[in-house]
Length: 177
Image (cartoon, rainbow, N blue to C red):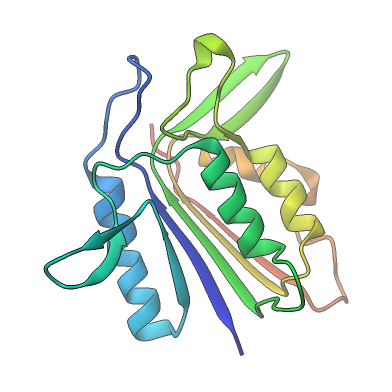
């Protein structure tokens, strides 16, 4: 049984009205170690930096994550090329979440390069929902530790929509205010 995880912790943001954080990278690294040591997950970290003293890879405290990097890593997790589809895929995201309310309410995972003044909001949760529905991964776990993470649940398709097809989805939004 193969288990893959993408653990994301974003501390740094270039948008002046979005303060930098201190906990997401630490939280993400702690989750990554637990998944590796106790749950037998193959973990990819974002942002990944080399911890020279320990000669290991860890979640970077001061390294940014672009929208392109986040999107590509999530696609690689839930829709990998070839036939190397994991039985279980887990996405953990810690950082800022944003919400736009212009006629409809939309939630976003904020990447380091967001700038709402220029209509750069980050990764749309609607896109993530659609990707999950199209994914062949049988067990999907989404763990969001950010503001507005509950937006992921604001759709009729919150259940896997695949009853009887052997697919499970667990959504763990940890909304912050």
